[in-house]
Image (cartoon, rainbow, N blue to C red):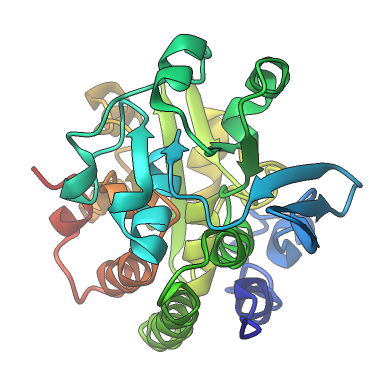
Length: 326
């Protein structure tokens, strides 16, 4: 099998300069102006072979046994479903989560949950591999293993995680064209990253990523959208948050004066618009519902989503194109 590039190398090069841009009146502290994404932990590293199966070994020593060339796969997260369908075709999927809606071929597949674990539903599908996400499904792992359901925990919260997941799935899925499609993904991402960086405006646009409005919760380092912002040459005004998602005070928003406010779940409520009326983002009409699936799901559509985000933040694309597609 050909050796695939690591998306983390591309992301590291893009983000090594920190958040970018200059501070305004000290509103962003030194930690924020230098903040870069931390290295993800627990990603799968080497692969050890044995007859009929292989062991994936994580950096922390955890091991997962996966069959050679699995052909009855259950995917429990939309982003994983998209990656499997892209790399190996939707025909290898026998079940998906209730939230999986892309590509169209997976919509009619049996729906199964692992949070809580639907043991009988999983057994009925007779999977040779169940793909879960460590961030969302870690508490389900013990029960799945107790019932001898073959499971592989993946990670996809950030761009670096996405690269590792593509790399691992290209080895697990095998089959005609899998390696070539993985290489094509890495190539598309590298090209999209260059175009996104070239589209950036000066001074760097300062962006608030609102994950929840009541109470106010925002996205920070280690989240997919934070990585994408910095790949666009923009500043996340909560880049000193210290984690991918956390509460944030309304006073901090006022102090940090974002040029853009992107909400990922619902439009910004009128009470916050009124309270933040003097912010550049609100005064200039730069409050956007950025809830399109390809922006929030790390997967094969991420390169195109990155370019679309960069085009909007540079004024070359209408903001409504970041909203969910109906």
